[in-house]
Image (cartoon, rainbow, N blue to C red):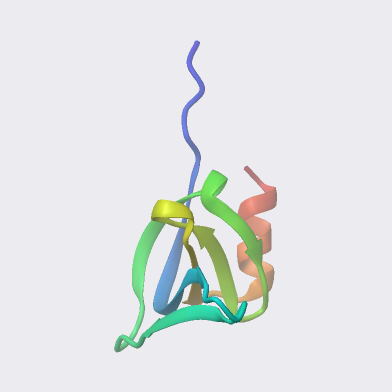
Length: 83
């Protein structure tokens, strides 16, 4: 039997991409502002942390993305712990 990848559906909006650090050890950030929220399936193995405002996920080439989300913190926590 093969393991199936698990996903959680959340409504994601604006986000910030962390591209790493510059020569002065300052984080290089790219902010993207969008109108509204869109439902997306996020692989749970990509989720690194959840705060009351952001879901932090990994991205390509070692980058990180901080996503704003519409659901409540309690709802996202419930979805993740019920998997």
